[in-house]
Image (cartoon, rainbow, N blue to C red):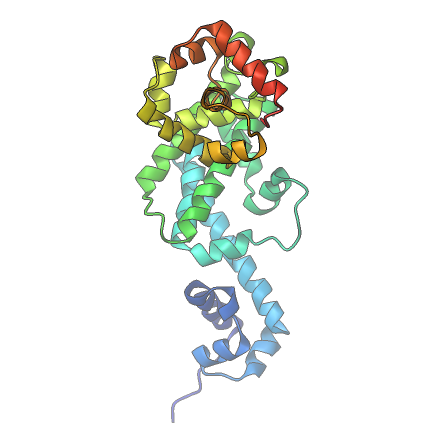
Length: 308
């Protein structure tokens, strides 16, 4: 007669992890665990007290896997980018465990609080940023939080299984974003003023908009061309710039006209270029008009109270 298989706490935990991997957290039921292990519910309750105890143990075990896998990213070069790649790689390999780890039970006070609580590795990242880029204090934190937001967006896309992203592509995207954010952080006040207008100059006066614009430039060929060597924008190219507006702010020419009926095509185009942080002189070249005309157009937008 075969000896009965002992159902240990470790076996229950391992089976529970597999259930989450294959069916998500909702698959984690006492019935499913018992069916997988061929045991009664008493074995589960005597080891974990309740099914909630199993869920808590699975979440902590998933976190341990996450900490090990993502922490290994710091061994790559450069370490901070390696961390970002490892973070997204884990989301690709373990999408359901990743979703479980990042599932917040309460509303975080801010995105920074959420990142600090669920992503972790802040101290390690700041150390890596200091070692590779020489950034400290507020500048280091700016780079840290901005890259994490990019990485979380990519990771969320990857967990769906439909993004088609590869690790080399992820590495390239993160690299471009790091370079874009470094451009912002290291830019002197004079250089930054060229892209970030004073509040009196109309739409686009926020440094956060400048950060966003630099990130978009790093990922869009047309914006790279226009930023490197400004030239008149052809009519067929405006559709791409309108798409960038929609992706970055969820605004379209149609939605702007719904709330501001008197906006002209010229107003819309000035708004888009201001939103993408082109300076007055650059906009003049891109639109084929004088800088004075651009300034007047921006003043009209401000008078019409078009949202930034």
